[in-house]
Length: 358
Image (tube, rainbow, N blue to C red; front, top):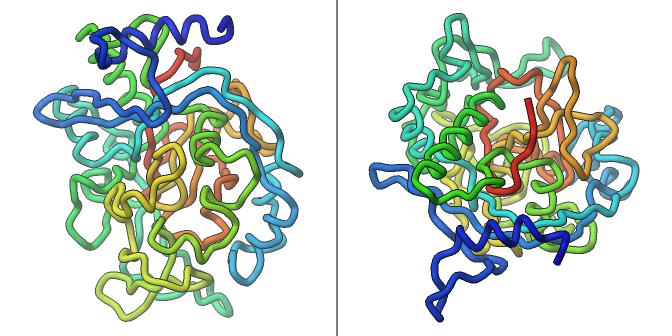
């Protein structure tokens, strides 16, 4: 009970009255809605304290870079996951967004605050898909489908199809995500719905991977297990879907089914089948999720990890463009910097103990 002291006291004030008419501690899977105003809400789900294994095995890395996983062999990328899974714990319960923050939720934030994202700043830019791209041309002059573009942002990620309010917001930076969570913290605190000691923020790396694995105690490639075939109808990655306005799918390895979207999918599109043991949706694939921690190439940390010079925020989970091997629970990369944004990157919020992060 001592380890849970502050948290247990705080959560009581957050929970609506139970059957008896008195407040009760939340249970795994309990959901609540944050009121963003104008009829817009944001759902979070309670995840209890627990333990998990962070990282991947050599066998998993070998699969990821093999014919089915499709990740590029011979690079250092998989080494970022650590040599072996490491036992870690999250010693407190916390709430996490069931999905990534959506376009509609982010728009509500901008409407109220007049916030200008990094990509929208003077001389700002963001990485977007170039619709003129046709192929990597790997045997001649290699070209890549994403390029830095001015005039593009979360309002227009250059998708070549209409933006929907239920898409995860993209082209937002680590700094933009933190601005959103500060606004939500201040809003909920002013309304008397947020006790001292708790805040909305980006999740730590340990919180994210614990939530992604959905309560599993073993180390598996995906939250449902190791079999890619069991992922059909569960997540959005490179699959058998034509790119907009052409008879061509993403090249390289892909899932051998149609997931319904060649680009981004609406959040929680796959319903109960796309939710893990904690009720989290879209934890693998979809869009990269930016994390509070700074990147350590040696592997993730149990406690919040930060550096003073050249901070590179961590992103997790893979995205709609990725091959299967790049959309596993353990996959982690470092962004170019706190103000970098990309049409494959978004974020998910956490409600938990305050973290001192400059």
